[in-house]
Image (cartoon, rainbow, N blue to C red; front, side, top):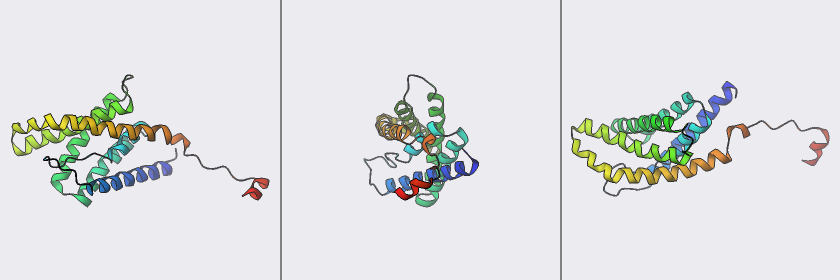
Length: 179
């Protein structure tokens, strides 16, 4: 893939992740736990994890967190999101090569560890180890949302591989008349 195509592809995936993040911010999902969300933008992260080199995945995941916080949140949101995204991405990178884990399994781990990362940062910032008890709710929620994200990302990985993004060949003489 040429440098220009790679830059364009990263930009498109980042824009898609931001759009999904914004769409999700419009969905009121609050069951007594602040910040509880499905994580639709993580579909793009999991897709990128299986389709692009590591620097591109980091750019997309980090860029989405920072830009989403600037556009739809604040510094506190950015701190929690970065903690979750970094731990999640690290675990997914370690889990991806395991032959017995599919993209859905990797995504489930990502969802669970995203919640762990955010909870650990909350414990540190608020100096309260008691917040760890919230993981009793967040871990199953992370597994369920990770499953949904993994299913969607798995479909994209199979249906939209980067290898299929080829330029169309030039139209030859007689073929022009068919158009």
